[in-house]
Image (cartoon, rainbow, N blue to C red; front, side):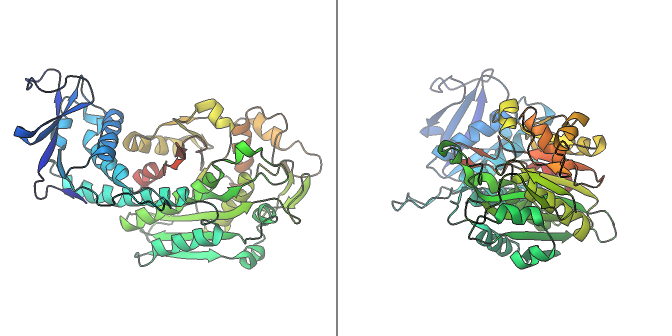
Length: 448
């Protein structure tokens, strides 16, 4: 149980620093803790003031290892910190993140009795911020559960049902789930082409939240929902299939984000489209060099069946524009291995066709403290995706150079001049074989 300024627990976690007058029993190694029973206090020692990142790392490690009912004295951790470091928020978020019970089907269950954590914070807005963070982190953790569930249990129909259950009863939030017949009626040819080899039908989840009816603007969130990616006929090697259950992370994150915003009663009109399917091989699977017509009407030559994410996203983008009348777009996807080569596992690659829209997003990351790096989309990248002589576009540029940028250029062909942000979360959606819910906090900060 996580509380704020509630009944004091038996022990208190308090931060102390190098320059403080310290009990000689305190271990003076940065990030170390010392329990002094006479004080009923666990002292956390630091060489220097904390920032958002260092506070997050310490609190996550502490909460995961902690067995006591404790108070956490947030004010003590803020000593000497810069004003924009948001150490108090880092501690609140980290407690919720680390206290979350990760998905497991182990038959030998751990002791599930969690210690009580009482956050002590003297800030005048502490209760307001606590309630906001509680909602946000609940949905971050919900997205993580979706991500971590194995593909035999988190297939398109089940995914859609989980979202529907989570969204039930929230004011001004509607949920619509398109089945295969309805997807065919919408002529979402690219999504259907990816699904063709699977014995399980695709789904499209559509969530619409109306928090500002007097405003005609509507933001669209689009998420890639490949619940398992074999690569199709361009089959992945066996070691590259490990972690492919996380290929639905984009859909998990955007759907969870809009639920969080609805629960927060955000003053925004926003819709989410999650395009769900497996990418399997099979007797009806789409062949390499097939040409498919998108919902947009553009024809696409499928030069690599393992470049499937951009196909389902293209139809999702068109649905959001033409059916939901969105005026701006943010899309999230575990799209390219190339982004891992460029940025590793620490930063999300961000692509944008509009500088002002990008700046709004970048400003939100200053509050969420999620790390991003803007990547280029140049005319050369568009040219590479238009090279096929028999279709409007190819889905895979053969040289594989600038793979993340050419993938972003492909998606830009479908946004119809709308301000658009593409988030390539292939490196950040999961860490150590666990989902992270990355970028949910940033999008929440933009519109809360």
